[in-house]
Length: 432
Image 1 (cartoon, rainbow, N blue to C red):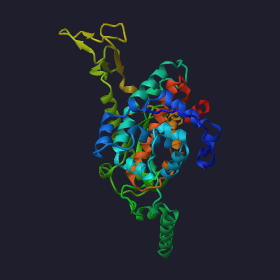
Image 2 (image 1 turned 180 degrees about the vertical axis):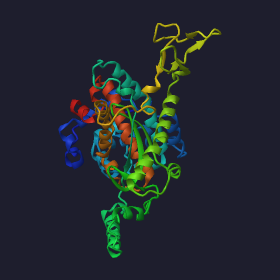
Image 3 (image 1 turned 90 degrees about the vertical axis):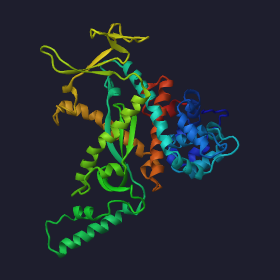
Image 4 (image 1 turned 120 degrees about the horizontal axis):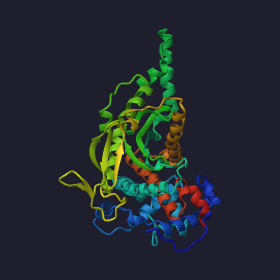
């Protein structure tokens, strides 16, 4: 999809404070880049199309690719609400034609229902883009010189937790201040000098929001409040690869009573790693038939223990000798490609890095990439401060934000400008 016929300057961008930075860029030119270098329909899973066109029982007024194009543009241009974007569609011929709304435009409620009805399908769309983006990052890595600071960052996985903080009454600062004042009054009345009013206030606060039990009291981004928490994976380049929201099954598997918010964060963050990494690995395996086969451990005289993996298109004869059957081999060895993993190089088994060491400082600089990536997410108004307490809508918005990030990578690759894979603004600058 993504088509654009008539070109005209969008004066409406100049009137919206959230989009002031676009006034000096080329928003229409950027639509041209998308039209010419990205085919959305080729990435939409077949199951998504079937679900969208079958649920109504009759023909849809709007194509699936048109609705998705509109929602993705909202994330790219940081348009905060469906109401505002509906005005954009009404006044901008270019955006309407880009999305494929030739006869009429959906109202704001249509977009809202779409995000709640097809949230799981939007997640599938994100997952369908990830393998392609991984291949692009691998190709980018091969083009880098060995002394590049970005070398091999494509193979890294960085994990962190964050949360969406909706506008519920429990997040009103007055609610917490009122509880702290009550605890201070209690400490003064009982003459308990060592009484920690803040810890007591935390324990006495409700554990979830009255508006939605999935919005829970937690410690996120240096303070505690009521969040819809999630875990996110990126590679060493800061490209999002996996998201998983914490559901009731997750919370029920973790100890519920905590003395301090820091203790709660430590327990939840550690327990969440597997629940985020495992779906990501399964997604990658389902998209690729070239997962290396484990051959077990091997060693040798004066050699450390290592684990051997061989090409999936290789086999062993009766004598145990290995041969490959690949039509386009990537090596001239008859046995095919082999690789080894050394246990002492696994940081989870053998951390090995001392805090405050030079190696620690070098590694942690890469770790901060995900902090900047999450901060970039929060720059988007619908992620920074959700106007809804519907967690399904929040999930859809976050997936759509990540989809826009992945499209940025694909677009930069198509333009042969890999240095722009992390910045949509730089692509806006070169758009003409």
